[in-house]
Amino acid sequence: MWKNHSIVTNHRVNHMIDRNGYRSNVGIILLNSKNEVFWGKRIKQDSWQFPQGGIKPGESPEQAMYRELTEEVGLHPRHVKIIGRTRDWLRYEVPDQWVRREWRGNYRGQKQIWYLLRLVGRDCDVSLRTSARPEFDAWRWNQYWVELESVVEFKRHVYQQALTELARLLNHDPHDSNCYSGYSHNEEQPAAMAAPAKQGE
Image 1 (tube, one colour):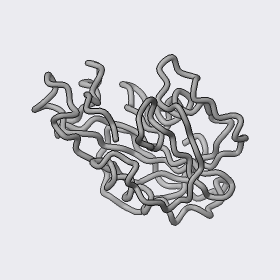
Image 2 (cartoon, one colour):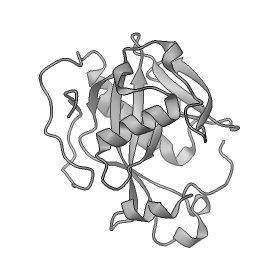
Image 3 (cartoon, helix red, strand yellow):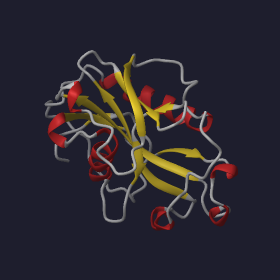
């Protein structure tokens, strides 16, 4: 499991914390042609997770997703197709011992938009050394539904939520013309079922 150190490592995180104490974030469920899911092993740790990262000021969730995909997995927009995303923010709280002392009382956790992507490139397009500070040191494909014991405990519920909401899109054609109405990362919308996404939304 993860070492007991702070998740909050940059003072700029404050710009993306909402009035309820949640930082805006994106998560990525990346599928191959067999509907197997990409899992990354956190560098020098025994835990596995999906790619994710914070939304920077001025970014949309989709822009943040593509940036994180490149930084953490080495893939570019041409390597993937968007199948869909969660309709609303999914939230998890971070235990105090994982938060820097100066942020305690102000920061509660993460709120995430989750994207379901299809890899249209090749496995060899994946590169874990794109960033100067890699997130992962190994990766694998796994079945869509697996036990989540390798995920840090406080994230397991949101992983289950994201996988469940997006599961109905597993066999969806990403070129389908149907799409949901998009919204920016700072808008609160009522929760709803996942919907297919149009490319470039």
